[in-house]
Length: 173
Image (cartoon, rainbow, N blue to C red):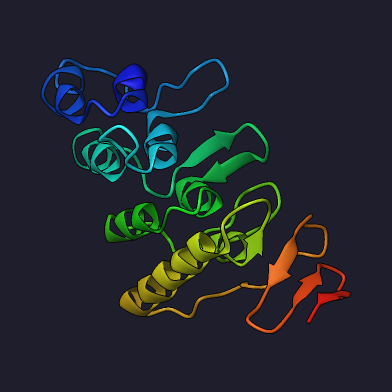
C-alpha cells in the first residue's frame, strides 16, 4: 500500500492491494504512512486526494488517527494536511470525520495553529487550509478553537496587515 500511495496508484490500491490484505497503515522506515504520502502528493502523479479517499473508504484508516512526522513527531492527518498546505486534503479528511479541533499529543497544537503559522510555505496555501477548517467547523457545528500559535512554536504569523514573530514583535507593516 505504501509504494502504491507513493506513486499515486489509486486503482491498484483500491482494486488489488487493499482487498488482498495490504496494510493501509504500514509506513516506511521513518514511519511515514500511505495517507501521509497521499497528502504530500498534492496530485503530483495523479494520486493525492484520490489516494487519500481510497485509503479512507477502503483501507479503514482513521482520519483522526495519530501519524508520525519526521520533523514534528506524533501528529494527526489534519495537522499533516495543514502543514503541507493541502486544503483539498483538509476538506477530504473533514468529510470523513476528522476533528477540526484535533490536538497533537505532544504539543497540543491544532490544525488551525498550523494553518495560521507559516514556516517556508506559500501563505496562500495556508489561507486555503484555514478556510477549509472554518467551513469544517461550521459543518461540524463547533467553534474553531486555538487558532493562535503556541508561545514556543517557531514561526511567524502572517496577517493582512503585518507579520509578527511569536513573541508579538512587529516584523513588517
